[in-house]
Image (cartoon, rainbow, N blue to C red; front, side):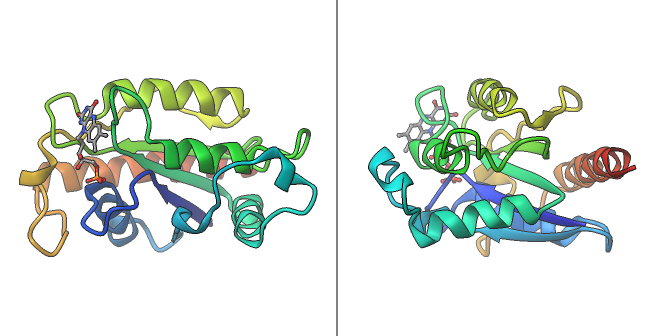
Length: 181
Ligand SMILES: Cc1cc2nc3c(=O)[nH]c(=O)nc-3n(C[C@H](O)[C@H](O)[C@H](O)COP(=O)(O)O)c2cc1C
């Protein structure tokens, strides 16, 4: 199954992007996870909807062709980063052509703080539900104190987190398998 993974951070050393790399590493052979770079998307502008910018069309096609989506979000000021909202807004447009409809979505998040993106994920899930995505309520994945969970190369080194991430991926895989039946 093809999975498109989106990081809500554009930062080179992003823990959230590192988490997606770890998801790629620890996913089963059934899952083909590709990380989509949202930094190429322009700022959303309804005037540009008539002829969609190439990067937007590429995002929409990748989502459409995927069997599921993984989003790893940082928490910015107790919400999601604007770059992630921008990607979701583009993918949902033009009206009636929301590419995210019916896609199973796994929400992850890493923060250097204590509450591991809990508030940002709450906002994000609200948006994803409105986009008619298949969001699951349990289990939840909040990675707090991220700076201690990755090494200097951005590899996830915390064994418990690796175990839990692997479980989350299994849940996504089984949700997709059921929805494809
Ligand atoms: C503008 C801004 C707002 C932030 N707000 C929060 C916040 O509300 N909660 C939190 O836990 N961390 C917050 N942080 C810290 C982020 O958790 C931290 O920068 C994290 O590393 C971002 O994710 P990344 O490593 O994937 O880029 C904020 C960081 C920035 C730049």
